[in-house]
Image (spheres, rainbow, N blue to C red):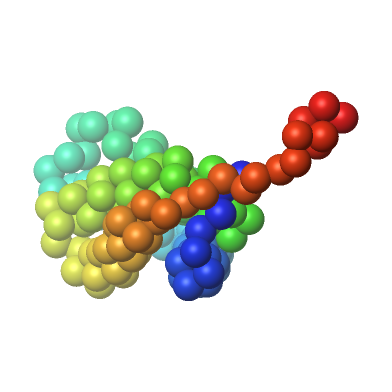
Length: 135
């Protein structure tokens, strides 16, 4: 388990809550989300790439899982890297598809995750007494 400084930990929790809220909203309106993804794939001339459509349809569920990991503070650095990769790909896709509203939201998440990763250089592992390792 990794420990962040207190202000970064608060920011991490808020970002995790926002990611879960965004994913929950997307899942509640999933049919509209899928139709928007389909329109975006067509407008970006990427409808022949089926794997991209499958990945984009799983996006809210992956986002929910990564947000939960951020809130629970499990695997912080790996979660940040996976989230940055996920939102980086989504931002690139949304820029190609000219979906500006979603692009702004995902760009804010992307920049917040990058900021958190840059400021998480001071991640320290908690130090346990030697006895707890031999239980």
